[in-house]
Image 1 (cartoon, helix red, strand yellow):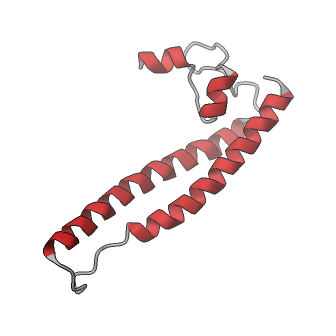
Image 2: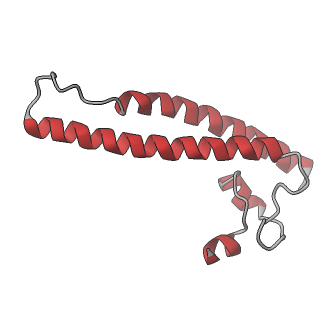
Length: 112
């Protein structure tokens, strides 16, 4: 991988991590339990509980992606970064730009 590509990916990873941190703070607020003493109607309470469940799921997914991005950032200077862990071929730079935490090429990821 070229140094320019590596530096661009490093910047993207850092930007994505910051975006996720901001998003996660908002999601934490949305994922707070609905207090039972809150005087809202039964259907509104059900909507609030459902919205909370969705926020929790999105928060979990964001936290997992943040960990993957931090892992990618830690190994970006390794020679193996950008190499498929399954077949050993280079992962295309277009895929790495879209999914900088990718550890497999498109072909191997599709097979799984």
